[in-house]
Image (cartoon, rainbow, N blue to C red; front, side):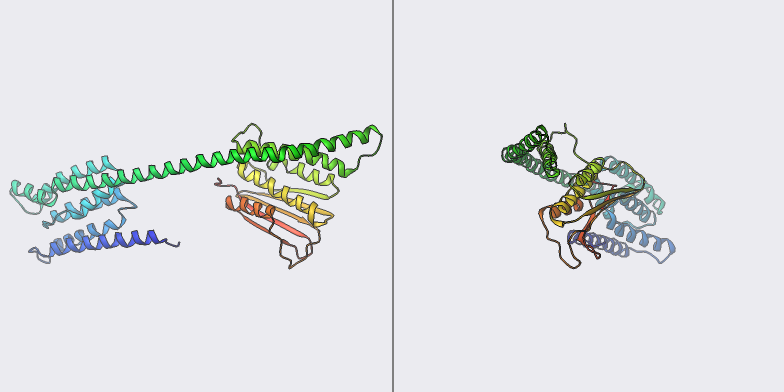
Length: 375
C-alpha cells in the first residue's frame, strides 16, 4: 500500500515523539542510583516500552492508555521514581479520540495504584509513598493533558462541521442547477420530440387508412419517438428527484434487443449464470450500456447481426455486445459522447470497460460491474 504524504508526516511525527519520550524516561531512570539487577532491567524495559507505545496512540488510543498506565505503575514498583510522561501523552490522545469516560476511569485507577507501587518498591512510609506517587503523576498535569485533548477534539469537530456545511451548500447549488437543466431540457427537447412522435403516428394512421403497407422504418420512428419521450420524462423526473417513474434496468434489456430486431438487426440475447438481485445503479448501467451499444450498431456499424451476452456472477455482472459491422482490427474507436458516458458510468461503479474492434471484424463492448458496494 502506498502511503500518502500526510500519512508519512504523521508516521514520522509519531515515531519522533515516541522515541523522544522513551529516551527521556530512560535517561531519567538511568540518572537514579540503581544496580544491574533483574528488577532494575525490568524497570528500564518498562520505561522504554511505555514511551515507544505512543507510536500507536492515533490508531489505538485506549490500548495505548492501558499500556502506558501499566508501565508507569510497573516501573514505580521496580523502584524508578520517574514521572509518567508517556501516560500523559496517552491521556491526551484518548480524550482527543473521544474516550473521556474510559480515560477518567483509567486515570483514577492509575492514581490509586501508584502509591501501592511505591510501597511495593520498598518504601515503608505511607506519606512518602503518596508524595512520590503525586510527583510521578500530578493531578494538574493530568487535567491539563485531558483539557488539551478535549480542546483539540472540539476544534476538529468544528472544522468537520464547517466542511459539512460547505458540502451542503454545494449540494444545494447543484440541486438548483439540476432543476435549471431540467427546465432547459424540457423547453428545448420535449416540444421537438413530441412533434416527431405525432407526425410519425399521423403518417402510420394515414397509411393504414389508405390500406397501404406501413414501412418498417416509419414504425421504428414511431416507436423510437415514444421511447424517446418516455426516456426524456424519466430523465427530467430524475433531475427533479422525482422517483414516481422507475428507471429502466436489467429487466428491460430484452425489450431493447427486441426493438433492435424490429429495425432489421439480427440481435440475440443470452443471459448466463444464476440471476440475483443487483443494486439499482448497476441495473441502470447495464441497460444504458446495452442501449448505447445497440444504438451505435444501428447507426454507424452497418452490421447485420449483434449479440448481447450477460453473465451473472456471484460478485458481479459481465456484459458483452458484439457486432459484425465494418470496424476493422487496429482501428481506434472514436471516443464519442455515448462511449465516454458508458465509461464514466462503469468507472463510477468501480468496474471496467473495453470498447474496441474485434480481431475477426466488427466491434465489441465489454464491461465488468461489481455488485458489492456501489454508490
